[in-house]
Every structure is written in C-alpha cells, then in structure tokens.
Amino acid sequence: MNKRYSPREAQYQLIERWLRQRVQQLAPGDPVPSEFQLAEQFAVSRMTARQAVQNLAAEGLVRRRRGQGTFVAPRPVHRREGSLMSFTEDMRRRGMTASSVLLEASLQPARVSDLEALQLDEGARSVVIRRLRLANGTPMALEHAVLPTDCAAVLAMDLDGSLHEALISLGRVPSIGHSWISATVASKAEAALLGVPARSALITERRIIYSTAGSPIEHTETRYVADRYVIDAVFTAYSRPASPDGAPGHVGAELAPVAP
Image (cartoon, rainbow, N blue to C red; front, side, top):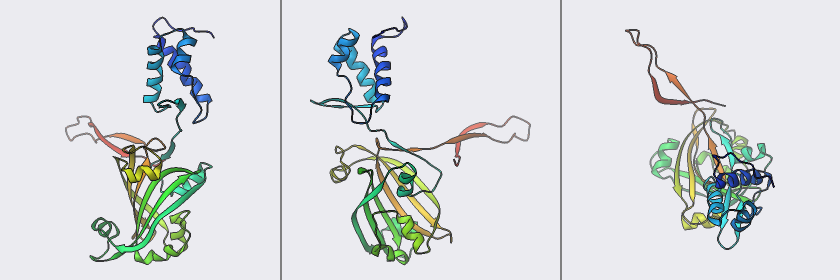
C-alpha cells in the first residue's frame, strides 16, 4: 500500500486515519485488523499500532474484547431533542422495528414524584408499566411509565408497541412534553436486561407529557444504553438588549433550545 503521510504526521496517526476509513466501510460487529497485523502492515512497533487502536476505541468507533480481538462498534441511534416522539415512532422513522418485553403492568399506589408530576391527590393510585425496549431485536432502553388511573384501559391493550398510540385510542392525545436528561450507571439487574456489563453508562431521560387538554397523562423515566442511543440538542446563544446607557448587550452563557 502507499504509505504517504506528512512529515509532521506521527506513525500512529497514519494508522489511525487508515483504520478510521476502514471502519466506515465495515458493518458493526465486523473484525478489524489486529495490532500485530497493523504493526506488520505499517512496519511499526505493536505499541505504535496499539495507540492508534486505543484512540478509536476511546471515540467509541471500535470495541476491544479480551482474547477475541477488536471489532467495529455498534453505531448509536440519534434522536433530535425538541420533537415529542414515542420510541416506536422514532424507530419506525429510521426503518427499524421497535418491540418490547413487558416487565410489569399493574395498578399501584403512586409514588410522591408521580403524584407531583401527574397532579394527583395524595393516596391516589397509578398505572405502572415497565418495559424493555428493543430496536431490531437489540435492547436499547428500560422504560418505567406511570399514568393516571383514567388511562387504566391501556393495561388490557397490546403493550408491545407504542404507548402513545394506545393513549390516542382512548382519546388522550399527547401534545407537549418536558424532559430532564442525566447520566447514571447500570445496576446488575439493569445490565442483565440490557445485555451490557454492570456499571455501563446509561442516559436517563425523565419526561412529563401533557395531553391536548392540558392535563399530564404520562410520567416516564427511560434509561438508554449510552453507546446505543444518543440525544442530540441544538442551542443558540442570544444577546441581551442594550443597556439604557447605550452599552452593547452582553452575550451571556445562557442557552435556549431550538426546535428542529
């Protein structure tokens, strides 16, 4: 092969650039050349080849499995924040098939957080639905949805698909939502369900969804596998109005989300 590179380009950078292009041509799960193969191909030490592979692994482009080799990492699903869309709708839009494993569906006393989110009276009961969400058979997230009891009819419906579609069939149409995003790590039980190592990174999204009538109909916490699902957010900085003395407005650090 032609090993042209800039005099300023380190050998590991040359290997990294070549390997990055190779990964883009392969499918998730495909093996990539080993450190030994790369060292031979580029006439460098294994330590130099290892540095290139480690850099791609740090970016999440490849995964290293002890005793097995290095493989192209799964490409995460991206969701643009700002549009209210169910998991089923999101996967359908991407040409993927969403499915669920129902873990729990019952009436339970509402927790304090659910009472507040759904504006329920103290001591009220709620509908609790826990599901493992999958895309093309791959576990993506654990979903804990809580609804007011006037939505209890969903318990008799097929909950493999979209909960939003089930709510719409009851005349409770989701209209607007607020979400809060944080990070956590998977417990042993969560990791086993999601098929990842314990303490793997998870993206946690908490949502309160309101119906077209303006009442809260869903309080959901969803935990996504961080390297399989990405939430994209777009922000814009804005300038404050000029002060009365004519001084220019200050461009602050405050950011406002822009709907796509």
